[in-house]
Amino acid sequence: MRVLRIALWVLVALFAVAFVGFLNYYLPSTEVVRVTGTDVKRMDAKKVDPAGVERTRDVRFISAMAFDGDQPITFRNEDTGWGFPFYFKFDSGDVTTRVQNILASDPQAHVAVTYYGWRVEIFDLYPNAVSLYRVDADYTPIPYTTILVLLLLAALAIFLFLRIRRWRASRY
Image 1: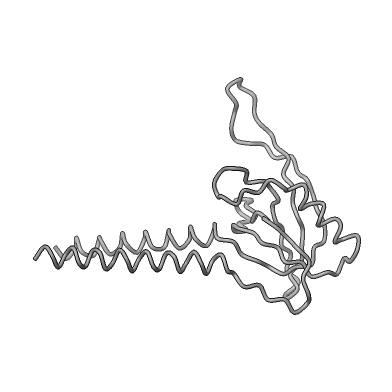
Image 2: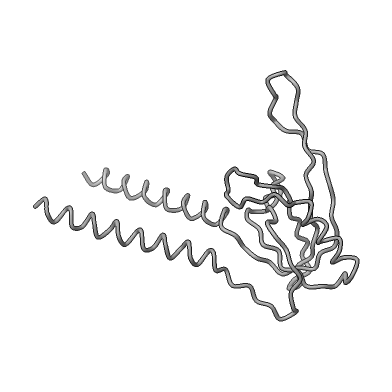
């Protein structure tokens, strides 16, 4: 019985770590950067369409430098469309135009980039920029969406905990 309880706690811990990783990847983050350029690359898709032709796509990238440590940051700039994650982003061309306009008017401008995802160099993964806008030098982003989602999840967890506790008390 003790081994079963330990195995259950290990599974719960693994699920919790996976869930926190899922939230960390898909919830929006904001970084204040100095934009340095844009790029378009042709990417080969791993999928083959029903006619047997390999699909390719153009992917836009935004290159930037972090103000706090002069570390390069590259963002992918792709539409999410109607699919998951539900950011409903259809304006990657407009985001690229905004970047180019900021570069033309003030190359040293502070820009807040809202994105989701991680940069994993070994797998060639880039965070996807959802939006960007020019900000003041003393701007500090507040993650309202992340706070709201975490509060809702905490309320759901408390509700489920109380319901399970009430159900277990009524059984005995």
